[in-house]
Image (cartoon, rainbow, N blue to C red; front, side, top):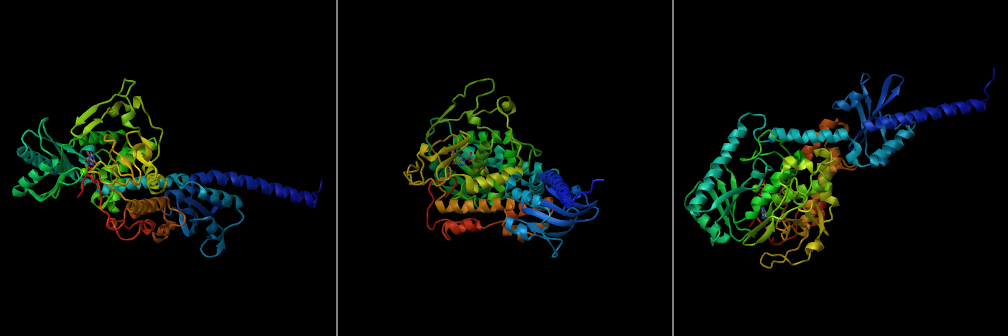
Length: 548
Ligand code: GTP
Ligand code: MG
């Protein structure tokens, strides 16, 4: 029998180790894709490594735990958590099994793989997390949505709103005989929060010579003398003059404008977008108010940006924030750029090859108000390949607004479904091409109205305010993706949480209530750093649509 030399034995040993190493590598690679690794000493699981969105979890599982237990339950099957490694630096110092054991250097492959995973895009890091996040968003919505859980409440709500709509109509038609009162805004488009206001615009037959300012004053006068409205606030000098009302009995607020025929068309446009994909509704509003005329209560509830901007106090046009209408368009434009939905204004009607013009002529100009308005047949000409969940899209939107969107040069354009250059529109941050009384409008932030192409809907947002608002978006995106050095994840105790609990905590954390951002006060830079703060002192807003 051939006796192995020492050298041969060493070589065989080395080959054996190499083979083990390679097998180990393959196993780790495949398990890592599932988000976890279970180290085994013969049959017994000794150590669990789990990739969480905010880092690598290392812990000792219960003896009976299976890999599925580990990922499936909250703290799933993990007996003691040694800590979460959030960065390359932490990695070398990671402690196993409480305070004693050091990070195991015998698995260098795992270290390399885990490091590369930690460096990879967090959005892809852990699909479970984003599924849980999306579920969590919907859970919150379920709890708070109007009529949620209790049957019959939706009907009551509809009646309550319907009553106010009827009263407003009756009063206006008696003050302005021959006029027609149209409901517009989110309660019609299906993108409303539960406490949304009711928006109306009043139209007059051709040849009527009232100005909007006269109408606001006349209706305010009539309502102050008599009527069910506790608050009657005329804003005749706003860019588009409006009358604000609050119904005493129900607390419902109403905004009434005059001759804003475009609002009818842009409301229909938003309503059509809302019907295209459940993610439009989920991304836009936090809880869906069933509209009086449109969606039934079972249609997707939903969340996100509108509720969130409200919690952060960054949705008051009178304070120099973008309006609700403007945020809605920003979400739609983001979803267009992500290929979740198309631009309806660039698609022909079904069965036709050309995109027509549909001109609306009003006293302030002519507008092309055409858009593809057959959502049921859209699939014949356009399909999405985007399958991202609401959680992923929400994170991507926060990142887009917070850091990626080039606000210096770009214009968000729902009409084209993309971004335009400010230069094309002659909208620079220093330009003075505002239409409103020759006012000097600086276009720090630019959002094109889909039909009124000369209108920058965010022209009232100044530099510091934009910076401060973006700060909020940056903080939210960091929390959502569990950025590696985020103190918030520590303060939340996220290190040892299971995925579902983590997602719930994250949603709660990003929706924490803040004071409204005011003009003046701390500088934009420090405001952005803390995700709060305010804009430049003493600046007066110009060109706010629904504001003072
Ligand atoms: P919530 O009330 O917060 O749910 O939002 P909303 O979608 O109702 O938006 P908002 O109250 O800001 O505006 C109501 C409606 O007024 C919009 O849907 C538009 O139809 C119209 N509107 C708002 N701003 C403008 C504007 O600048 N120009 C025009 N033409 N219409 C506007
Ligand atoms: Mg509204």
